[in-house]
Image 1 (cartoon, rainbow, N blue to C red):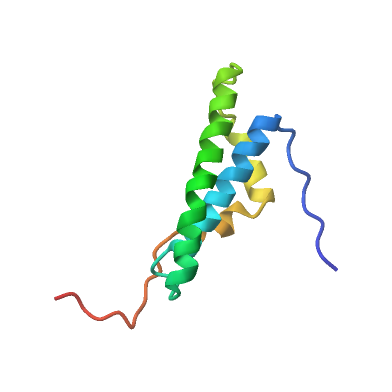
Image 2: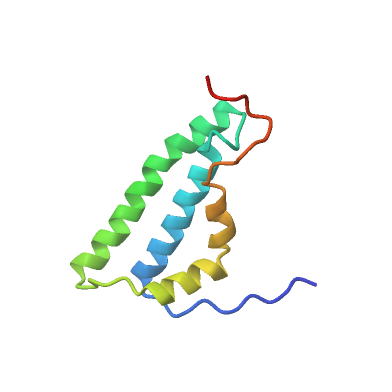
Length: 105
């Protein structure tokens, strides 16, 4: 049985869009991460998609700003990111340490 996730906190439409776009950008950066991937085509496709998702993130933040939503509510947004597996997803962006790596010259 799959454990029940905690409910998402109440977010404005723009906040929800920011969270969704941010996680999509993180996912794409994880696919591009050269310490984690060996497939140039997959990394290229992710890099191409990154442009559009970064633009969507910028647009969501612009919408918030234009509507007078001048603050990001960190605790609420962090809770939403945790519910949506943001902690695990963001680890894919970090550089992997590899014991097999040759010593620097």
